Length: 586
Ligand code: ADP
Image (cartoon, rainbow, N blue to C red; front, side, top):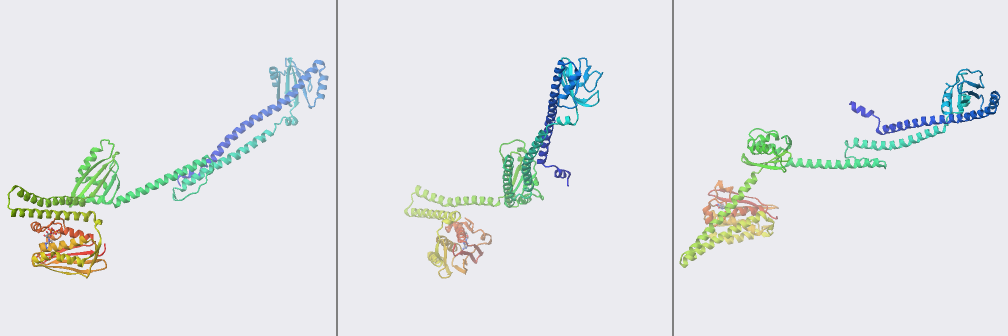
């Protein structure tokens, strides 16, 4: 056990210290009052005796005035008064004893006796002392009457001592007061002590077990109120602390599971917090192994962040500053962000923005493609219209150009229809109405619609579907799937081919289809890209065939809308097969 702990255990409790200090102060005060009062009582009783003896002195003087026979006068006087053994002395102004009833012929000068000395100054004085004449102890009372000292004395024996005894009542009174004070003080200090002990118990036990609800009843006084207030404040602070800890915990968890790499640093660049992703991303970015978040700034590509920190930390600022750097490494794109706070502490985050970057590039590509696709028919229309406007043409030629214009407008309409359909599929899929669609009927209709074109190219088709194959889905999207596949096969597979639509499998949830032709097929390098928007194997051929380059994209998105999957396989020269599933009820 440590010395200070031993000292803490052995020390006297505060309430006891308070009690004993107040009690001793009061005791000291009482002792002073007692001594003072005792002294006064002693004085008072002596004064009383003195005044009796003083009256005797005057009576004696009075009698001596009348009768100069001292012996007889004193003898009679002594006999009359109740005090036994009264000694009467008369001293002349020179200190010579004129008369003493206990001893005649006293020669020594009595002016040096203390009561005589004082009486010469104050007319009356008393003294308790041993007699210089007979050695006995007396209570003397001397009066200076016209220069003569009349002195009556009584032996200071047990009787007189008893009469001069101090009145005991005041002693009892003081003892009683002391006792009352003791009780009241102990009651109050006990109450203070209890409050302190409870507070101490609370402060020692709560930190060990903060969840425990300790029931503490404090006395109904100001100290109790203060204690209760302290506990309330403590609990409130504890609650806030717990909530803060929880929030911190949540934040740390969030950082650990975040997709971004993240680290916080002090103004001296010391790491406060960092997640695993940061270290992982930093290692992708760096050629050397990185073990701590503090090493991240050593990556050469992070030069702009380093200079930013070096420069900006020199000057004070009122708001946080931000610096970013985009780094391409190992086929990925990373965005490094640094946030510098007012107190020079900072945060660094690294995020993998490869997908966003790709999406951004794709969107750019898409816009370019749309613009390009629109440009061709629009400039064709413009050209035809200019020819029509500025040339005198025969009716036949006019009709030809107007027809061309119309067909380009048709192309534009188809293109816009396809774009808008794809946009709706991506952005507002829930707007498509769902109904029960009979696939067998739907395919029969498409076959009929395409019959003429197929006949023209000597194309045959077979469908193998369960009778009344039903799907709860969107009619026009299901139509688009099969129609686009038919149109493509007719347009690109070549002449004299055979199209086979087969529902090769069905389970409780899905229909499994294959759509194949035995035509030209698609070269290996293109097969994985044919579902991309505006992707064409042979651009010229596609345009000539009236294709927008969006057909298979619409097919794929429509299949996805029906919770299915699609893929394509092809052996050039032997045809293409599209394999896809459609959910019976979406
Ligand atoms: P398009 O508007 O050009 O038809 P699609 O997305 O429908 O656009 O098709 C993309 C490309 O895939 C076509 O340009 C075509 O070259 C190729 N293709 C599609 N279906 C077939 C098929 N059955 N046989 C051969 N090539 C095909």
